[in-house]
Image (cartoon, rainbow, N blue to C red):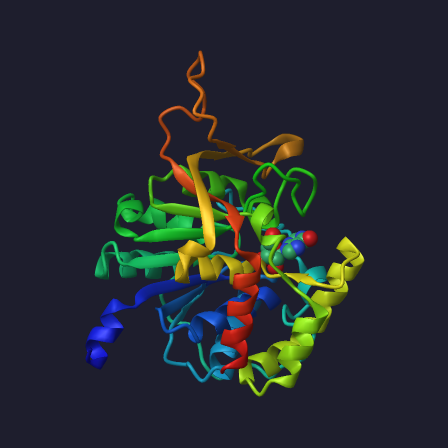
Length: 326
Ligand SMILES: O=c1[nH]cnc2c1ncn2[C@@H]1O[C@H](CO)[C@@H](O)[C@H]1O
């Protein structure tokens, strides 16, 4: 196969990201995965504010020497235009990258908004682009608002988010990315696109241990070396919050769902998101196959795929391999 043909066979990926220590890991794994081609990063608030997410996205691409990949800045507010956001600096550090005081990036974001960039790429390569959404779903919901045909033109949307039949990580009801913008999440889950949701019910099984960190540290991989610099904060957070000495690989797991879907099994059904009250951000997945007596808020909504099991060891091994051989 010639170069052009190999390039054509690769799955085109846009990563919507709020970097974030596990985002950094997912981005590096993506850049070192021959099965896919990263055609852009779009940024969103979540682990950090959007402005810092953009700065970190540009910084990480510079670390990887991939300044050729465009970064489009996303929304600074939720779908309801709320500006008081929940930012998880206690998970990733106030700079999002383990408080390392990295120098500002030289590059700049493109002029287009994240939503406009998503719509443009979906039109340019109909059915071929996979969006891996690692933060709150505002940019994807805005892309749907901008172009109602977006759900049919995008290839797949892999969502890192939701807590399906388990407790959340913001509170017992809600997972962080869905809690960040529940209205956006409900729009995306019911938009009719090919959607795969990877929730914390599976990502909490994908754990990088201290022994794995030592292996990364002892390798010569440049991505592994960089990650070891920033990952200490993430380990401390997990020890404090979960009393564990390992860290959850949320974002790399979702990214690998796009690279190698056979590492997961799925169930199909309709997902709705609670947008008010004490259960704001709750994801409710209807896969009972039951015929309810009444019409419900789930009736006649499009089905999505929800990951139910994961080959966690294979996933950790793959993440490690991609970081060490870099
Ligand atoms: O306790 C938490 N609160 C807020 N965000 C978190 C927490 N733990 C992890 N993440 C971040 O949110 C996504 C998974 O829900 C991941 O992207 C992770 O970086």
